[in-house]
Length: 392
Image (cartoon, rainbow, N blue to C red; front, top):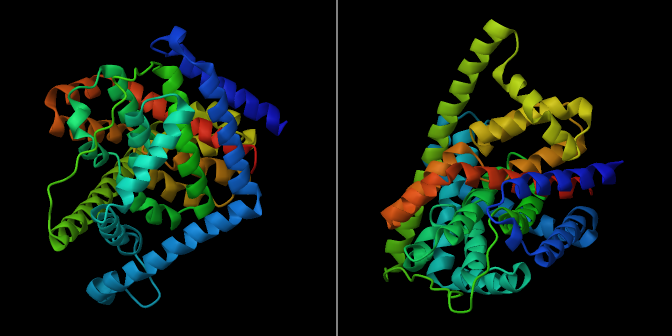
């Protein structure tokens, strides 16, 4: 039964994506088949094998160590503000982003990250049938983040046609920044975070290949990565530390605003209709939760968490998931994988703003297809969760 539902889920995703495709005749099915098989194999390897367990364990323990180092800095500055043995979300989950951001800056400065991103992207371009730029951008998005990634390819932003620009933006919304992966791992099982990161990378190409199919000629298939102006090591380090701090503060502000607004809306709906806004959305999203592999008796509850992510952000939804302790392990895993992406309404503004800051005309183009971006990124999350559900 599990396999039948998974097949149904994949068919639903493909059907909904195909219905919104900009050019159905240009869809190339061979790369699609290869990538969906790769997704299934990777999900199986990560979730059901000792090799996957070892890799995830190594990844999680590395971040655990890094977070403990970050904690030294946080405790030095804020240690006296909390009681012994207690923590606050801002101090323990968000502020370590500053340290991770600094590490990313060091790896960028020493040219280690650009080398890794470029050559992984080149390998992926052979698999997905897309251009080198699209493949580079997908890998870079998963490490640098949904706004910073565009700086690295800003030489080409102004020259890109609408369809290629869409794919770049879709990749940025379908992945997450490595600087906040540590924060996710403190809220949900690291196993699900790592699995989602890998599956979303291929899922982004799969959905974009259906929703926005095109071919890139050899003349167009050029990758020009922008080298930032040379800074001293400590100039760079200070810049990345401040960037990490800005991310932490922005996420904190978004959480304060969204959590409070959702509480207000829930209160209004409960008072008038006897059902909270989140519960109402749960019924809307329940069918999607079911085709992802969630048992029907838990589908409304799971759908509510999924909807929370879309209307607010993944942090709010992960906090909400932590309150639903009665959910089965399988449902928790499927929903967790769905949550690990930037597919929400606020990301439309972030991505459009990032592109507009580099090229105003292209920023306006992005804003016009913003809802299609969110639609595609949500389909990526549903597909990743459905494939993973086969092995949970």
